[in-house]
Figure 1 (cartoon, rainbow, N blue to C red):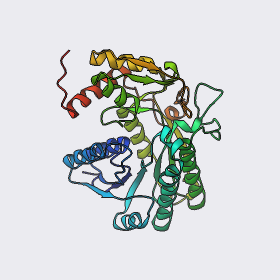
Figure 2 (figure 1 turned 135 degrees about the vertical axis):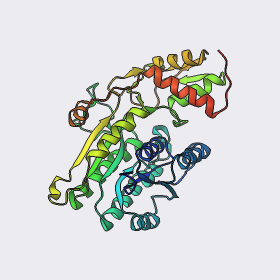
Figure 3 (figure 1 turned 120 degrees about the vertical axis):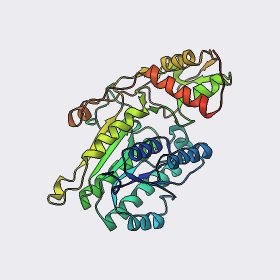
Figure 4 (figure 1 turned 120 degrees about the horizontal axis):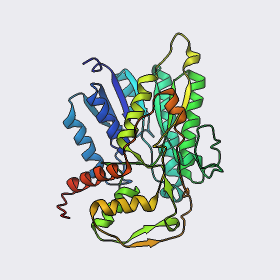
Length: 336
């Protein structure tokens, strides 16, 4: 296969987005090296099961348990492999945890990203795609989030750490001509998703017939984006970004929103889950939590102009796909 000799490095390979990107690159014939520290922020079993699935797919997948806060092993990795592209998806996730444990986000996101760029600049030039977040937009006067908006007013440490990774990437791009694309992901959902995210959490509680806590009295809205749509958009970016050795000034730093472009109210999201499972749940409405954004809405015009517009998966179908996976993964024989 023409891509077999091209090796892709994916950090955070055991994570939600990282797993799906590894899967897609393997399906496209690339060799993939996955890196993850398998921390205990959420179920280690789920992370290890994702990695097991990747090993089932292809023989040209390698996995290394590496903590990016310590760059010695990462340095050795860049010596062992000549990477074609690097997708830096590793990060400490979780808005609410960042309020309670801010230093965790400084070390896992800011320090780890700096280590990655330090290692790359000491070895060879390779395009890097980094995972940013819609959370960096903070509280805006505009409802539509364009990449032209200022993002210097984050409202919690998760957003601060993600904004910092963009600034780090910009600095190394400027100093060392490393081509970098920062992708601001908007509320990703789908099979193999994170247990701390709304879809997973709501689904689990509905099946257990537990009360669901809904903050801001259910008035939140999010630009929910299905994982397959995220992956297709990242692949388009990855196909285009490359090192320009003849004119290094063209090794630009770029930022794109990666979202659906069509936000939905959280209560609609919850109602669709209930309908698909065919079970109603008890809801406890609560005030807003510190650090929560009211809503997110991705302006996708820049991405669509530079690449192409992708037809997004309907919310109902995406939820159905997740619930089918959830029932299979947890061996739930639920009859309607």
